[in-house]
Amino acid sequence: MDTFRKLAVSTVLLALSLAGFAQSPTTEVRASVEHVLLQQVDAWNRHDLEGFMAGYWKSPELTFFSNGEVTSGWQPTLDRYRKNYQGQGHEMGKLEFSDLKVEELSPETAFVRGSFHLTTSDGRTPHGIFTLILRKFPDGWKIIHDHTSSAP
Image (cartoon, rainbow, N blue to C red; front, side, top):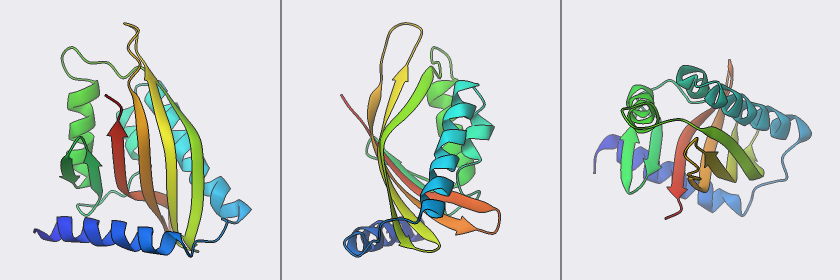
């Protein structure tokens, strides 16, 4: 197993094991984490992928799991979004997040569960669920791991 995969698996297992010990997030943590996600929705709906990606840790150690695939790194994650939502025959649509549940794992880490819903101009409505792990950096909260599952 490569280093990135080991890190991602370890991070997810740690988050899941700590979830039972998680405290209710402070108002400040919840508001800060939700602000990151609201900024992402706003950027997505402006078709600004770089703005959307500002919510992610700009590191080769960022992990993104979706559709049975692992993407490691900020740039490859941006490239994946471009291919799937701005490539030939694709569109970004209008994004909404709902059912957000923020759990504070420590003063510097948070675990988020939620749902996403896209609406496209052709009437398609891709949707699904996600889990995120965020870390507080000097420049704010950033997603360090994203596991998104789309409904069939």
